[in-house]
Length: 197
Image (tube, rainbow, N blue to C red; front, side, top):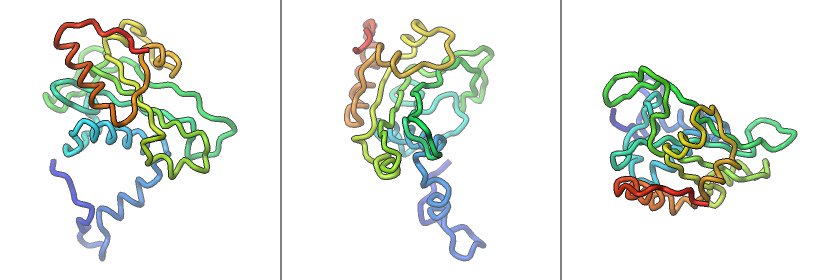
């Protein structure tokens, strides 16, 4: 499917554009659903694969250099009223998935990706969240091979940030590609990937 330009008109709407729809529907990036897709875009952009249109129900979020990547997002601040900051945890549940490249579904539950990227929007002031969500200084990226997750948490449905931090340290947006490239290179060289703490 080809990408649609921001100014693409919506025929029969008397001037509406797809960009106007996107602005109306997706401007609240702090909201869980939009933040998750935004995190996928950030990782895709870092890897240079954001020119491919997102496939919502694919088995994995991104494909890069022959590997499958799952992107997860979490934040302390939400778009709804909160009495306290949210606890940070990520979904790592084993699932049956549909693969858009082969049009096949898994027969057993598993983690389909080779690498997980756990994205943390680390702003803790709700009144600043809408502006700072766009600033990469407020994002951290924890990158873990699925093999390590499978060894440490073989059947666990979710994992807390503190447990991810035992497996790896975060990198800034500018280092996402280099870190993923390093993991891919070490995996292809047959090196055992030690936790980066």
